[in-house]
Amino acid sequence: QVQLQQSGPGLVKPSQTLSLTCAISGDSVSSNSAAWNWIRQSPSRGLEWLGRTYYRSKWYNDYALSMRGRIAIDPDTSKNEFSLQLNSVTPEDTAVYYCARDLSATLHSWGQGTLVTVSS
Amino acid sequence: SSELTQDPVVSVAVGQTVRITCQGDSLRRYYASWYQQKPGQAPLLVIHGKNNRPSGIPDRFSGSSSGNTASLTITGAQAEDESDYYCNSRDSSGNQWVFGGGTKLTVL
Image 1: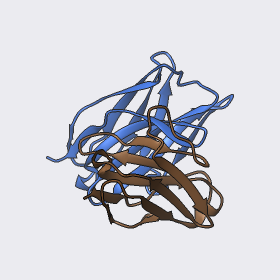
Image 2 (image 1 turned 45 degrees about the horizontal axis):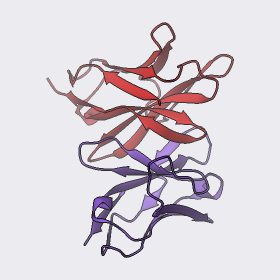
Image 3 (image 1 turned 60 degrees about the horizontal axis):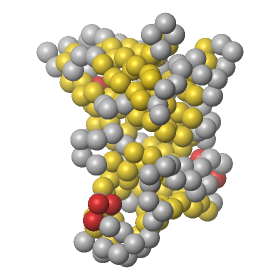
Image 4 (image 1 turned 30 degrees about the vertical axis):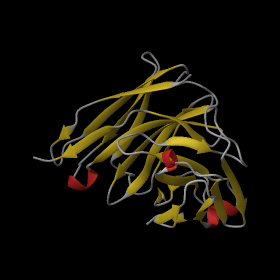
């Protein structure tokens, strides 16, 4: 059974970088069939997909159009985890952030969620 | 704005059948998945693909699709089904995921 364990700070200052990590157990970040996603949820925006990374003989990324230019999702094969970096955050980036595994076009497994507040 | 549209609030009496719908152009090409979310918890997958239930999901949950509309049906709703339900699918380009705005289900 796949389990995703999130870690990272719950408070980030405006204009700084939000960084979260998702540790994978029960699967490999280098899987040729899975993709590894970040999603966030806020009262104003609901559930919002941010992007994903996946391996199909080489590494690929897809990012939400609204995030392009300030987001990076990267795998760490040595630790079997993947990370989210979101630059130049504002209070509008305050949300619960989730990592999730995408298998066969479905988000089967989710992390526990991390509330990130952007405030000075 | 979401490319998938859901009714914000739906109610059902205990034991009755309720259908929660999700509309969007991408659903003509891609199946929707359905998630149940209770307060303070991560979304839980309940239906995916044509009509597939993950292990542990009661068989009172079922899914269907027609044209640009996907539906989640709960046959014989229980009090514990009171929750928020979200649909999601790929967008029309196929490279992005989109979510519906969610439906709050009240079980009376």
